[in-house]
Amino acid sequence: MAIDKAPSTSSLGGDFDSPTAGAGAGNGAGVSGGGSRSSFSAARRAPQLVLAASPTVLAPHVFETRWEELSTLEVWGETLNKVLSDQELENTLAAVHVVCMASGVIDDMQKYYFYAETQAGVLFMAEVSFSSSSRRLSAVIKGPSGAADGASFVDLFKHTLGHLVE
Image 1 (tube, rainbow, N blue to C red):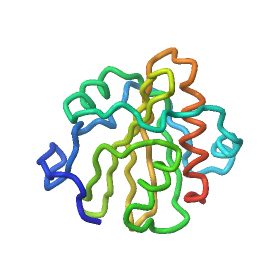
Image 2: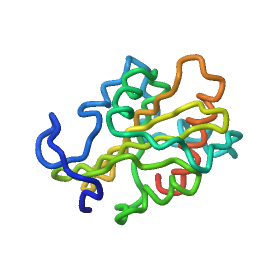
Image 3: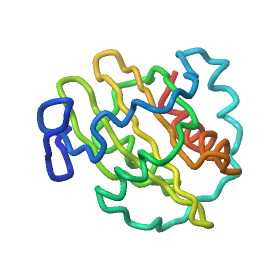
């Protein structure tokens, strides 16, 4: 997969369009997933949250600032059921109005930065990375602390990717 945004150098090395180098550091939230079916079953129910069809466009520096401000809602990991084709992850999430801010590849690791906004203007973000060789996907999902829609966004995110994981 080629970088589909303007390349920049990050602390990870190489060409990668990352508004938040090392953004996956999180803020100490628990890890879920681990590849077990039981951790993902709750996400298979139909999500209740409706996202804005046209979220506010974020400039890269605004994305980075907001990423640092938001709380980690969940760190989630699963194994993909196949190697994803170019644009497959972006197109899957775009179908529910989760927008890709940046994406790129470093060695075997593909990394994406997504964001979405509720109709009330609440912002949610996610950093998603996966290895083509191991098919291991991990996501750091962020939102405002105490946001009533936080759990709903996590459910929507997992539900939307449900057909891509084992």
